[in-house]
Length: 304
Ligand SMILES: Cc1cc2nc3c(=O)[nH]c(=O)nc-3n(C[C@H](O)[C@H](O)[C@H](O)COP(=O)(O)OP(=O)(O)OC[C@H]3O[C@@H](n4cnc5c(N)ncnc54)[C@H](O)[C@@H]3O)c2cc1C
Image (cartoon, rainbow, N blue to C red; front, side, top):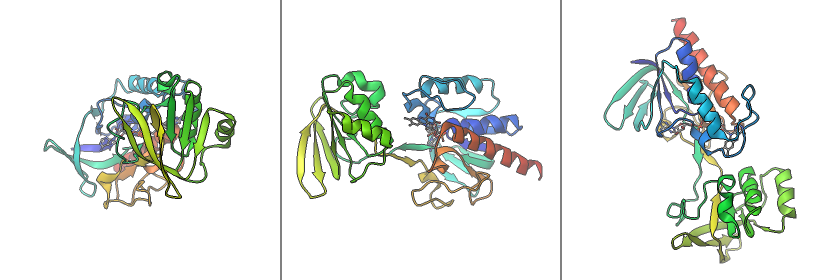
């Protein structure tokens, strides 16, 4: 029996665990991946806006700092924890191996994942032409034709980065208008290597050993193909909240609804970090929400 079980070892979950530990609560963190850090491991750009921490070259560097800071921890951390089900009302976590863990409170810090297109070739060519990151993989596209899919900041930024090395970049967006910031869009419009295709969907990624072409369809129903050698998908994120469905209140995009104390509509169940923050997710807010949840639940326990 734990005081607190934290689900997810990204910035939010680790902040909650650090604070719970400091406040004398017996805490367990369950992380499904083999290492801590969550999304920080996908950040290949410098992070310079997390107040109090010196700028880092990328998210992994910040993750390593966090890892060093939690090193002398007393809370338990289990990596590769495969959660089969969670009963938030009973505060029980059922692991796929059969183990059942209980706590007085549960902190949900499961973050977000990249959205998928769910088209043919998307899984098959991952790492074989479908690139993880424009920043990390820019050298792989030298002299090549590439396609970036998406309409937000991440897609626009990747198109600009890849255009430095690639011969040609197609930026394909299913909508008519980009959500990306004006600064990126101005640069894109001025870049002769970037061709924008709006109101167009990529319907299939094809190739042999690696990506060779994509199939597309526009809003007029016209179907066509483009030869490309690499693809970057940036069509947004979605929360990792399926396990909690029908147990606590979600917003219409399945993000966890919380009050200003980070508590859900179920007592002693807290939502922290990106999974509960659809509007303004940042490292700072994730860490702040983790701290808030820990302090609120510690004060509730101490008054009982
Ligand atoms: C490219 C990029 C650049 C960014 N740049 C900045 C920046 O400059 N400044 C800034 O402040 N923020 C930036 N961010 C945002 C910042 O990284 C996130 O807001 C923050 O890391 C979110 O932390 P989190 O703990 O809420 O979620 P996550 O980091 O998503 O962590 C969630 C964790 O939960 C785990 N998990 C999921 N499901 C389960 C389950 N069922 N069981 C157990 N564990 C589970 C995941 O494996 C993961 O480790 C950037 C993000 C990206 C992707």
